[in-house]
Amino acid sequence: MKIFTSAQIRELDKYTIDNEPVKSIDLMERASRAITRAITEEWSNETPVVVFAGPGNNGGDALAVSRMLAEAGYKTTVYLFNISSHLSEDCATNKARLIESKKVRDFTEVTLEFDPPKLEAGTLVVDGLFGAGLNKPLAGGFASLVKYINASPAKVVSIDMPSGLIPEDNTYNVRANIIRADLTLTLQNKKLAFMFPENQPFIGRLKVLDIRISQEAMDATEAQYTILEENMIRPLIKKRNPFAHKGNMGHALLIAGNYGMGGAAILATKACFRAGAGKVTVHTPRYNNVMMQISVPEAVVQLDKEETAFTEPVDTEDFDALGIGPGLGQSEPTSIALIAQLRRANCPIVADADALNILGNRRAWIQQLPKGIIMTPHPKEFDRMNGNSADSYERLSKAVSTAKHLQAYILLKGHYSALCLPDGHVIFNPTGNAGMATAGSGDVLTGIITALLARGYKQAEACILGMYLHGLAGDLAAKKLGMESLMAGDIIEHIPAAFNYLSE
Ligand SMILES: NC(=O)C1=CN([C@@H]2O[C@H](COP(=O)(O)OP(=O)(O)OC[C@H]3O[C@@H](n4cnc5c(N)ncnc54)[C@H](O)[C@@H]3O)[C@@H](O)[C@H]2O)[C@H](O)CC1
Ligand SMILES: [K+]
Image (cartoon, rainbow, N blue to C red; front, side, top):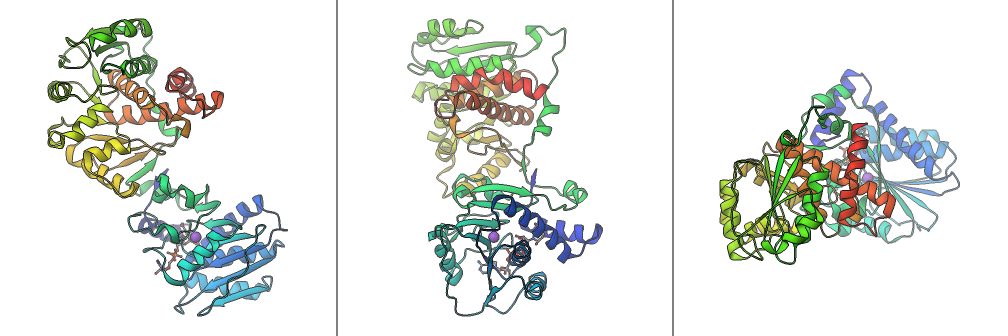
């Protein structure tokens, strides 16, 4: 699913209106029917409804929904906020239709003074104040109204967006002045703001309603942001040649695990095998030798000259991909070996965990990273490399510009992991769950992506398939074991089921 900007949404509306053709007011009627249907599916007409409508088209939707709910027997109280004596054309038409239908008995147009109604626990509030047209945080009376609604025990449904949440650039959000919805009914496509973890308390549950915006126009509109869908993943899966042998199924090299962190190397190695690498060599400190051999007998163990740390860059001539960083440590000798390793590697690279922390400690080195490198930071690792960000939007913007500047692939891990491509595009991953916020989960992802690179997937495909598979394996594991008990090893155990599901 593409994520469009507010400006693109306006263009898409216009195209749909001109080419379907459908009148603008009828498109609003269609959207409002879909919203009304979604509300009536969840709340019976015994539920008292209080609607707050703004002056734009979000308010227009809210007025049309009020009329439809009243016609369906809901006791509906409606407030239209028209403090600057200007309503959008379709909002004005819906105001007239609402008055004309005579079904809504309690309608107030607020121009100056507003005496808020009592909002009780059984009441349903419909928030139609502002939607995709909001361009600055709410202030004054609207801010007070939002606070009043949020403080009430009523359930809240937001039309299109929780009012007060800015659709794209969240830098100037004033969090106290944003509706905290229980349910958000968004029209046609998800908005960028929905991808960020700190905005989830505003959105509540999210439903996307199809309002039949022109598919042709959406296909032709280039979007910077895309959310992965299963049908984009299935075609990526390479079929195994029946004559395959381990020598042509990819030889992956992992450099991982210092003293006390050998488990990270084990997890990455196992995941690398489960994700289909033909051979895996793991370069690790001597101390890890026995446990590596016992835990993953399938792997070739190549020992560093040092007992407890990685200090010796490896010739990558014989390898198809390199994954480096899980549990690596950040000592001086390891840092020096890391940078030498990154410079001399002549195969695709995934850098994770301590590899990124080392770069965070020596930011000048970041400029010397090889083009095409994949980095998989979680937010803290990313901030160590790029400075603190006030919020996820700012962090994502930095990741986009860094990926462009370095010609790198930055996979920013999170609730929706965001893959930032060298051309400026961002791909969000919808799979995964909170149970995966557990030690070793990132090592598993590194192993998976390294395997896919070794198998011959290009960087973008390896990241896309890798993050989707990782999340899906986590979802399948959580289904069986529950999120609370999920461990990184369980994600590995479910990679086969994830692969099978996607290959069906
Ligand atoms: N394709 C679709 O998605 C459709 C969406 N619909 C609905 O239309 C709104 C967007 O409508 P728009 O009129 O563009 O914007 P808003 O109603 O969100 O608000 C615009 C209004 O508010 C003013 N404004 C902006 N920021 C502030 C602020 N901080 N304080 C006060 N006033 C502010 C701005 O200047 C405008 O006057 C979308 O969300 C859907 O609900 C269509 O109904 C169908 C197609
Ligand atoms: K709204």
